[in-house]
Length: 420
Image (cartoon, helix red, strand yellow):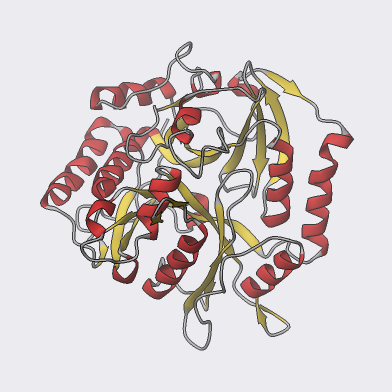
């Protein structure tokens, strides 16, 4: 069975976009990673992104699902329970990746995520809240492991993880990455439901339990948001300055994405590095994966005294997913851009945002976008972005700088005489 479509991008001749200079190490190994993917058969086994996995703390599962129903297109489908977790499946569009939310059954649940979160001052109070990683469709988990394990990619196996969700016959996950603290998962069954994965027992939630979700979806619909917020456009992880290239190459080893390019955001002392799926014409079918990192490590920054919100985030929260971006349908409602309508409406419904909208949508194609404040449940920021007049670029340098600065103000940790 072949999962991956023929690429629309010729990786042999493609020249990455942007102005960020990579090392000779990166330039040497990028084509070798592509070549090994082809020769090993990975590109015939692994298809597009099938789902995203987010974990929240015990007691936060249904409140987080209600937040998602109010602020985006994802709706609850079903719930399963294993020895350690409730597992919620959400759908946001027939052809778009599913969303899986994990909720520990007990306050004192502990695994690698708990221990990572305990290391950082702004994540310690949410011990199990973390974006876990993406799940990709594969023809066979067995074949996938046979390809990647000889390449020193480590997988979780039954009996070796606190949460058995990460290791089953039809659903398998890598260890947490040393560079991103995210996993990559693979599934060889359709994710229209979870029954075929043999994860545990089905749980039927009663009307009282579902009431907050139903109410949030009703408010979303009745306030005119339905159909305006589409699927996920991209996912952005923040890593340390010296691990940018390793994080990108590791990810490209495990999935059939390509390195689209990198841009230097000098005023924020960072770079934005984008990977995308080569055979989808719409990123919402398999969202772009973005890696952001400081240009210089924090211990050297005092020599230049530049802003460094990206590395401050990593020092305060750890390497982790920073934000998930939804695309807003291009157009206007009563002379107001749709993204402005969405944000104004969500503000009226109590959703807080960081600073103001960035990007002008006038007579020329452009992006208009904004960050929400981070979720109290997942610690993730939500971005809303409208591609005005069919703008086909991935981002603008000016917008990224403004968004990075806005987020940095909200992610400070004050201790002693150091304020970051």
